[in-house]
Image (cartoon, rainbow, N blue to C red):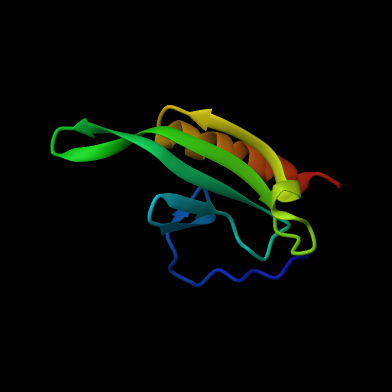
Length: 100
């Protein structure tokens, strides 16, 4: 079993931690074999705030021995943050439960 390194009380989505750094959101525990990286590529105004309207989703291996471009397992773009988080959740669950 992988060692969990997420701090208690962290923000979560569907039971997995979320960490935001500017326009990048990491989803999953860095102690697992895979995590999702969501990058906000575009925003549109909605009332008095800005909402993401273009989000890149990538599933990454946390294996430090791989080159950065070899770490990317899957990628796509979505038109809002909710759809991006949903696909990230599905893909991450599948990757973590696979035998590879």
